[in-house]
Length: 189
Length: 189
Image (tube, rainbow over the protein chains, first blue to last red):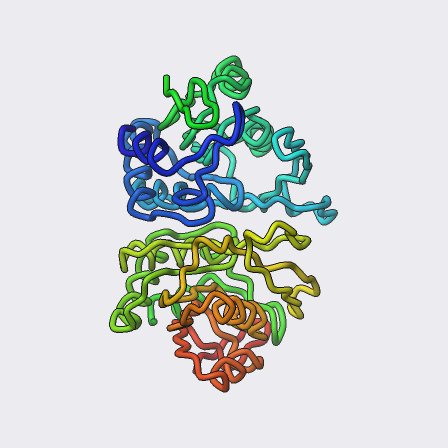
């Protein structure tokens, strides 16, 4: 997506080979006009996939996921990052280890918002190691839903997430694919 | 806002006199078409207020705040709830005690996204005790920004937040104002 790549070059900042700051337009300050165009791009790619629901993981994915849900006219479900397990059985939960942030959390969603047979599209802001997406896919298995697509705003292709998700057979569509970066330098695929 | 009040009556659930569940359309599963109409309603009310930026507190306010930002064509800034203080001076931070959830957090925003003289509109999903809004107003004072308006999706008028914000002289506009509730019963102002 040219508009997004240009914005990353203009306003993003590579801190080192692995860390990209995009907090001026994506995950702290948010440009909603850009998010609307991102939503349209995801909707165009996945329109034939008969999506019944969008899911995202709080909180940086909510803006692009919401605009995709609006364009496809389906509900958005925001999965929560809870610190501990809920014991009352109302939730699907899987433990996710975030190597990037060196944290872990219980990825959680109320069972009633994932009905058997739903075709779910996951939208997330970044793909690096793929931990969150694999956590979502495990919940979809448990809920007997189909993870029909994964839409990523910014993919770091040099980290293992993309190939892990490809190996699992998912339809992964990334709007900006970074091949390599360093301070002052960002190159796309 | 009639569309919102009807949705609260149809799909909301009062657990007791103080607790309203709206997780089927506002803060877990999200109806983005409703969020778009909510954004339009906030934009209409605050259009004359010369707003330069929307702020919200992660994460339930992001969807309605984002749609308001899109309608008014201004940036959205998502304030973070951090567990501890950041020591490097890049952030404005205030400690917020949430009586509703019995938690506390450091409401945090990068200083560079609040420039002196900005006219800021806070959008949040609920108004109960008003702790988050008062925290935001303290940050605006520190940043020499004007908190030019507060837009609330659902106000519990019987809790102290509304009168605290009125006493401080803020322009508070709520789309649904609940006068009283109990299991099976919700009455609007």
